Length: 254
Ligand SMILES: Cc1cc2nc3c(=O)[nH]c(=O)nc-3n(C[C@H](O)[C@H](O)[C@H](O)COP(=O)(O)O)c2cc1C
Image 1 (cartoon, rainbow, N blue to C red):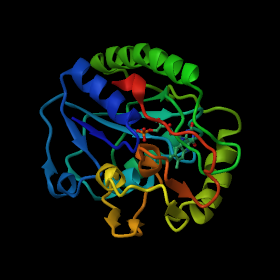
Image 2: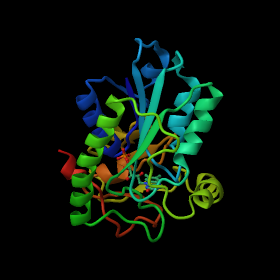
Image 3: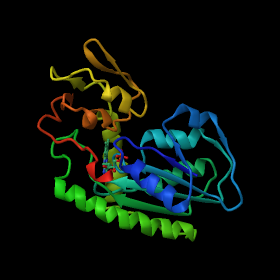
């Protein structure tokens, strides 16, 4: 079974490819119904978690899911995280959450995908050539990962692109990021908004309601930026930090 979370489609695409190659089933972590179910495993069944990297760690939604999900201890557990650049100590943070449940993690991988983070100065989506190249490389990478998982590889250290100063990013910068940069408050729609409700439909945690004056954000936002990227008229902004930035449409995933 493959539990996945995806805001803008990259991790859903990776999870879908893995499910095809491993003949496995997908379960969305963002749906409440996935938390009300109880999971038990056939002998030898593989259990995977696929998700994006947010601030060099798994998204809070994924860590909360691990805390709350009702399931037997898996015999073989792995994760695949998708990132725009680098993962920092994502694997370590995930392992800590798994340990609370007394579960072990046998394998972990990262897949570099087009970047979706645009909410801070200096961060923008990739140019179209980089997007295309990243997806092309990712296909081969996911095939390699599926091959290893089919053999139930057990790793001493994870196969993730941690990047430079991973400890500093995950344990020093991330708490600051979570404290000051995760609020949904700066989200706004400009006059260009056509109330098409695509943001409402796309929000993986059902946190947006489009009313007479346009979209309204509730307070359980995951900062996945799906609303920002899906808007067909680029009307959604995060304060003034996203003005002039690009949108990610996932066109190479289709
Ligand atoms: C809030 C947020 C934080 C992010 N932080 C990181 C990061 O720390 N490192 C990185 O390489 N990419 C980061 N990214 C980029 C995403 O991890 C990457 O684009 C991912 O593939 C998006 O997956 P999704 O389309 O399944 O949501 C971030 C994206 C968002 C929205």
